[in-house]
Length: 94
Image (cartoon, rainbow, N blue to C red; front, side, top):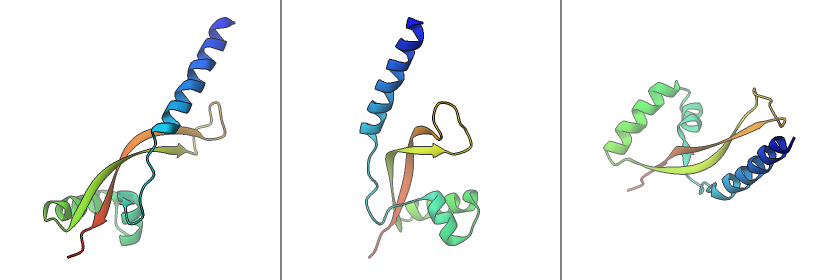
């Protein structure tokens, strides 16, 4: 069962590395999902409007690396975590 121990060791190292790579999102930056809830619009409609706002220089886009949790999948832990690069948006105030 050395293979199982080796796989577990690699999984632990990977989780530690991913945890250190995550960036904190500064105040004022919101993901498209958060903006969608505020505007009470669908995600696709929100993404379309946000893209137009970024093009018109009314909003700024920045991508943050972060860990996301999927609460539906239960594999090794109560909640499996995923590392993703998520675009966030901030209003440009004149």
